[in-house]
Length: 203
DNA sequence: TACTGGATCCCT
DNA sequence: GGGATCCAGTAT
Image 1: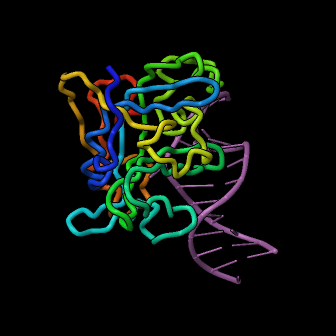
Image 2: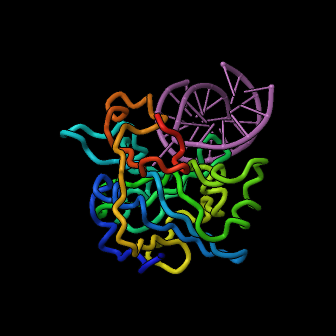
Image 3: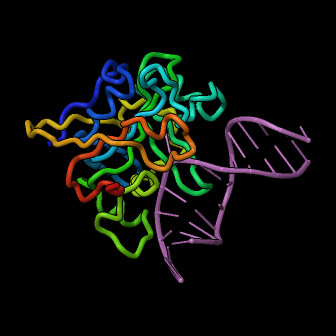
């Protein structure tokens, strides 16, 4: 089921190219408490151009800053940031150095370590509520800014291939919660597995 | 040194 | 529908 780890070169394509390839693949995090793995079911690309228009929905839109520095790194590391003062969001940095691109992993389907995930999430309801959102999956997997700028081809936090042959029905649509982005809000850069119950929300 | 608002989640 | 909660980015 879980195959070889993604290689460095697979992260060097543009975010819009990588984002639709991640659903179906596995996100793995090894910690002292145990191992968590999940099948990625939803992603969003950030920081590319669409018909020559820059992505004003991306953190990297206003250039390299202290927070966004990881996005400008060569593809293959993590970019984890704090949102709304209390939740973390996990991104896969993509593209050549200096591009400012990343893919936000918005939801996964738990595969290994559900007990650990449930323990970290203190919600009353478990099940799909464990990881069906960017903040939720980070909480479940124990991903915080401590995991920022980690090598995603390394042994701790990494992407692994799905080694089954099954075809995946991917839906492509606009991204969520970036209404402030005049142009970017209409870019069709959200990708999720059709009918998967772990997708954060459907329209 | 002060202000503003967000790639979210949860409860009402 | 609104509150929690904090820090990066920007303005003063």
